[in-house]
Image (cartoon, rainbow over all chains, first blue to last red; front, top):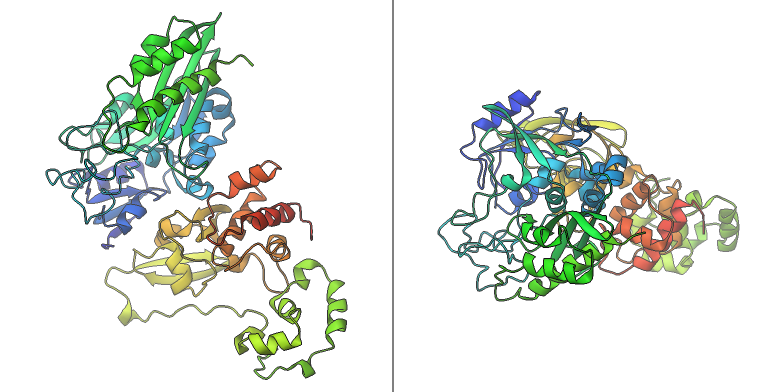
Length: 334
Length: 229
């Protein structure tokens, strides 16, 4: 592992200043914030990331979870995954988020990982993680080893000819269905970014994964006030029953009145290059009967533009059935 | 007691009497390496045990000394509080908490399995929460209380969970065991349901290549209800 300078800023402003000296906030950033470290230390050991400077933000006062003035929930950037998952308001009003968090990683990792760090988790593509292989996400222009290689776990939505790396997150799929916003402090001040606008698809620049610029520090994630009568659910399908990433997953937030779907939000995991919001499925669902036929039509719409690679064609049907099952469970009357 | 390389059956009390006396003691102090080995039979100790195993209480591990001349440029100071004691070191910032415990602080009870947060062998407690020590840098923990397997209990004074692992034969090679026990002890203060499935869900971050899982689950169930058998 390349060595680094280690700094502990005493304030958010100091952290922003320290981060602002990085040439990029994306792949190969030379200054990196470290919180839980569960992704960063892993990648540093693999030499996939080799920052010259680590800025330890763990002492900053960013771990609170509190109600927002409008009735929503503000989750501090440093709130640990385990704390968020067991928070009574999250369990009561945003159950999909709790289910998603508890389906991911391990109890030890959830105690370390932070909300903002989780937003920034990296792909598990084996070629990205192995510097012996060509990878456009690490070095644009060198080629994608996964296309034509081992790509069973890779994406079928949002891919490009340069990169098919899947986003492996559970938390962020739930946050996408919940229409979360991300609060960032940077050199130019504070801003709030809708999670839909936060992630970048690979296109021809797979090394750029989100809209963050040097110095940008995520300080919180905000959930909108819960809509009364809404239910939510997270279904994760994978090779093992535990401690494994999703082959396909679905986060559903839905409100049914008199047998008709009044409101639906659908997001998919395991199949997209980014946490995948499916407006296509929502368009089919809203205003229609909450029945099997509607669910299947929504699933077909969600996967219509899927582009499987040589080993992951099975994900198309698997993702459809995942959507149907998740909708069935979340719309069941008790 | 000093290590006696020539400890022979003739210097021990008669085996039967020793076992009778021992059963009167609570499990956590009754179960010790010495007692377990003695239960193999007197011939068993002499035949199988290298002299080191005849030692009794684990002495305080000496802190590995790092002379200034061997400290790398860019070494950083850190004071770590481990099992209630403070240690001040100068270390390479790349040193993980795991390597610091094992190599710098000479506490090798915590094991390195995968070094990537995927197996749980390196599980320790930081401020009472179980974490993978391989995925954290030691220098980040100067404000934290760290507990390792060495701090959970000692021979003759085992933690109830350690005693349960022995009682339920919850290990084979033993390499995952300290991580399993650290997780299991944490489970005792987490909201985990009562069933074996609940235990599996709570313990899946610790994997065991030997497959001792059924006994591990039994041990966790026994330990967290503080049953001795």
